[in-house]
Length: 217
Image 1 (cartoon, one colour):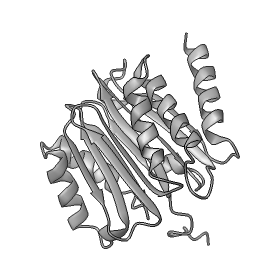
Image 2 (spheres, rainbow, N blue to C red):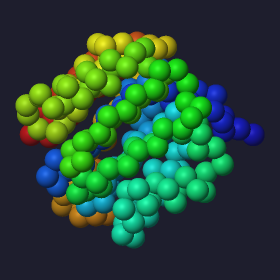
Image 3 (tube, rainbow, N blue to C red):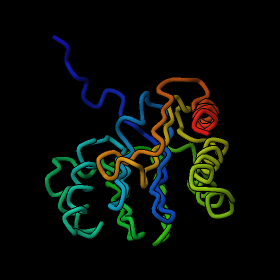
């Protein structure tokens, strides 16, 4: 029988989530494979969640569900972590559709740990980083870049990768953006793209986004 591995390759990761108008999006990169399947969680008109470190992927959907029931990001984060057996190894960032922010960085996260946020705009988190500069470059690039949310997020991820990224080297990357679609809230994903394993995941993700957008026109 197939046995699901637990914490064999935890997403030690650098990530960002942000709001822009009616859109909510996030990007992430990691030395762990398939990082996009566990770290980014966003829901139209609700908010976005990063859950990483020794990741408990259930925290993302739980926090979004609590926020949909009118909990603030901080209330939703606190309630979700109260049900978690190991909050000390979690790193979680939350932003509401209105830009309210909450962050948790556990006391036992590995390596260099960083975070930054701006109410009404973004949350950026990282652990097992090559240096604190990774988060600094992500944030600076996001604030200085032009264009729409997708390209601002990708530019920020690229800046984090250039600053050193994951201390082990990057092997996976992902982008998730939600917003208004013809399907309403039943399917809100404008973009959900992932590079699950590659020696150059950020570059490949940018290329995949370019292909995706060219076919959508």
